[in-house]
Length: 64
Image (cartoon, rainbow, N blue to C red; front, side, top):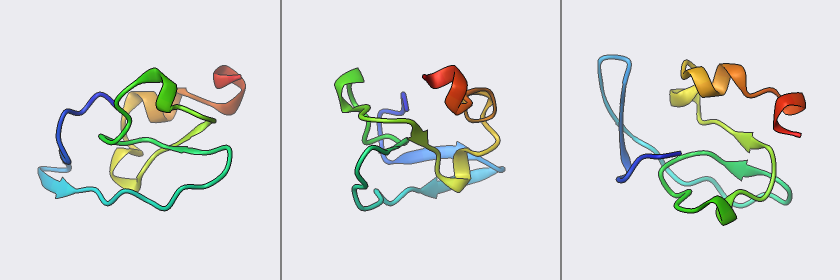
């Protein structure tokens, strides 16, 4: 979330994220989330984002 392009920086390089297939009640976090209304459920973070502070701090309890 919060990225303005499909590139993200991390782990010493640049990687491209592929938008996952939609799943009911789940929001796949990534640069394709453009507006708060795009968030339909607890966010699932791509492996490349697992080290982010948001990914670590946002438990399901905190989200709810």
